[in-house]
Length: 251
Image (cartoon, rainbow, N blue to C red; front, side, top):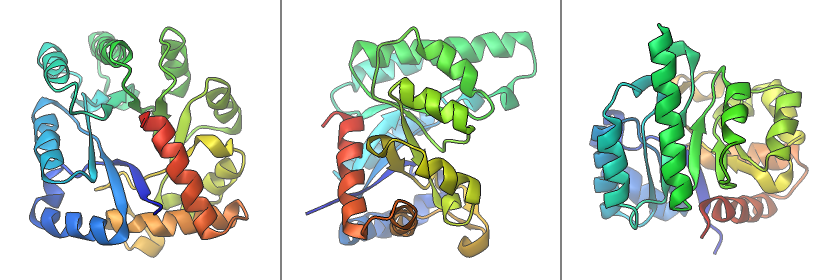
């Protein structure tokens, strides 16, 4: 049986607390597994708790660039202590939106590189945040040998997409692709074996999603859209995405 995968969702976000039981039940019925990413140490512990409730949850723990002032040593210890239980490290990365000073920039870079190092050490995949920072992420990643790296919510241009493909990165596309022509164009130019899909919930989406917080149940719509763009049957697209995601996860 083919499984669908949400390659990047924040199910440990408080937005989902009241509905988590029904979400897990729905995932079972829809045959969807989720890479549950984290923001900081506290949120990462919540991710680990959720993963104990269901084997459909693939836990990623780490420090988001917005939370770069979190306790890095504590996070490194958390990763080491749970290395056999986590599926990957994330969400990690760079983002100038959260930088106010030169010290902030240095700290964000240090956190990113430290978490890349521990992921490389343990051969774990990484889920990378690269908003407004793709070229900087590319430069940093040249120093690391990890091939299982996902540029989640890819938002670069065609040249940057080609660079990502040349560097053997995976890239993921979410619900915005359903109605955004630029994302559809990027998808069509992505190497098929490097495509993943995601929701990035609880992010809200406009248009056909009516500004609702992303639900994991959006995934079939994203897959259907991708299948039309790539001129594939839906079942063919799900099989491709399952293969790509298991390759990314190294399972």
